[in-house]
Image 1 (spheres, rainbow, N blue to C red):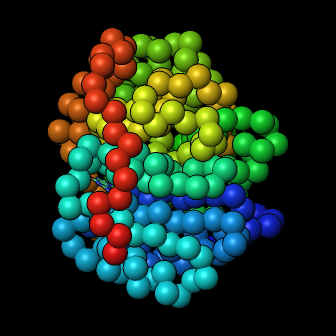
Image 2: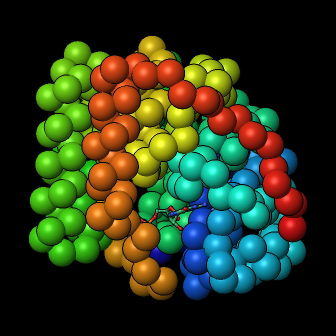
Image 3: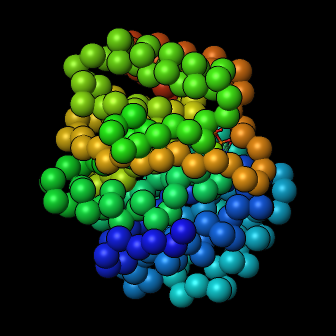
Amino acid sequence: MEEQYGMPAEGVSVVVPTFNESGNVAELVRRLAAVLDADASEILIVDDSTDDTARVAAESADHVPHRVRVVHREDPVGGLSGAVITGMALAVHRWVVVMDGDLQHPPEDLPRLIAAGEERGADIVAASRHLDGGSAGGLDGLLRHLVSSGSTLAARALFPRRLRDCTDPMTGFFAVRRDALDLASLRPQGFKILLEVLLRHRLTLTEVPFAFGVRTAGVSKATVANGAAYLRQLVALRLRSPAPGLAQAAAEVV
Ligand SMILES: Nc1nc2c(ncn2[C@@H]2O[C@H](COP(=O)(O)OP(=O)(O)O)[C@@H](O)[C@H]2O)c(=O)[nH]1
Ligand SMILES: [Mg+2]
């Protein structure tokens, strides 16, 4: 389970958005710590929970030598996307890795993302469920699979050139160079932050395959409302409509 890929990854800020992940966050911190260089990395947990995720996360930080920062937002502007942008604004290292807090994005895959970005000279590395060697097995049920493939098709049909090399624009697991990001260009809307990052910047993309895991604790927060927000996000990206950006700093550090 705790397989490592070579040396611990360095120069990495890991941004983890959490909403009621108290059953997952301690294991996440422990497994991330196993693959990250304690002296050249940080874990930024941006939490909008109504449960005690922030407390559990802060306690788990005491058991690892790494810098773990838990930001609990009292005013969760922009939901998941807003949380990710908040974390990106706090990140100090060369690479910013965005990953879910429910272990569906295996922490052990993180070093492969960084290695691929460095070796291939890419600005952004997306972990894809749809490349050879990847899988979307952890997605819950036929309906979620259909919605996911429909959303992917819609995005690639609307942005055929920009998403030409992107087999999985719906993935929430990616690494991006901090200095390639213009945070003011990002709009905190929808569940699909990678799409926002790719379409608001001109980045060289590479992909690595990964197997989307099964959620074993807590519940998915993906809803029909997220589906509607996704459609609005696509339209906004297509029209490039102006809207206020968000690069807000931490609300409260636990
Ligand atoms: N901070 C924050 N995190 C969120 C929010 N909604 C979902 N998340 C987190 O985003 C990640 C993906 O959400 P999840 O419900 O697992 O979506 P799914 O994997 O598509 O079913 C998880 O770490 C959630 O805890 C939110 O409103 N705010
Ligand atoms: Mg999930």
